[in-house]
Length: 248
Image (cartoon, rainbow, N blue to C red; front, top):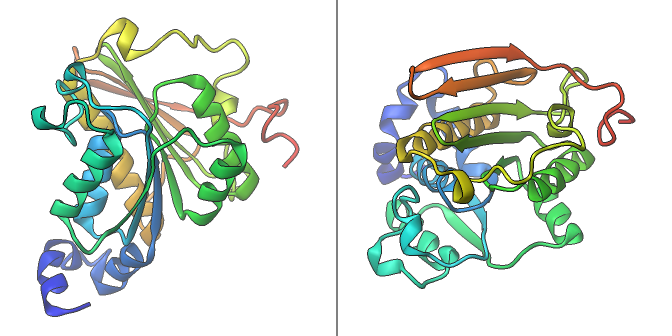
């Protein structure tokens, strides 16, 4: 690291759990972020500002006026632009040291698996179960840690799935074939700061995994009620009959 980088990341480097070695791990890492909306916005911004070396960002939508209430990567002037272009510009302004790789189309299975294989951590910041299931399958196949967040109305959930660990469940262990695919922010609404809280937690957990510090959320499901400001943590076990990870 040069003198400018040492100064930029000084508040992290002074933490004994991180130090220069941990910062170097961040700089050498690749994070795959799928979805640049309410969750992907804070997650990508914090990972860029923290010094993650490469962010692979995936989104094929355009910025709409209704996005701006919560998707803080984008501004009024970005309406009509692709989220990839808007996000890339914002992230580059935050930290020019972070390399941004932009994928501006819906990834087919082979493309998704290739992107997951190259990543050190994967952040699921999308808003539909079909995509979440596909991301999970690719992460199980290539044994990559998956950091999952979701928020709707005033409720949110958060967990980490890391099938490098024998005891870890996968996302499909949490949701079987009867998942309610209609539960989206578009149909039900969401309060804006809730997405910032969960997206920031995704970034934090990604950094911990990259640096190998602290305790991860593997095997735990965190539930948050914003109206009562209550957190609840539940144990999440592997499903021995899971169609995705049971045979690993």
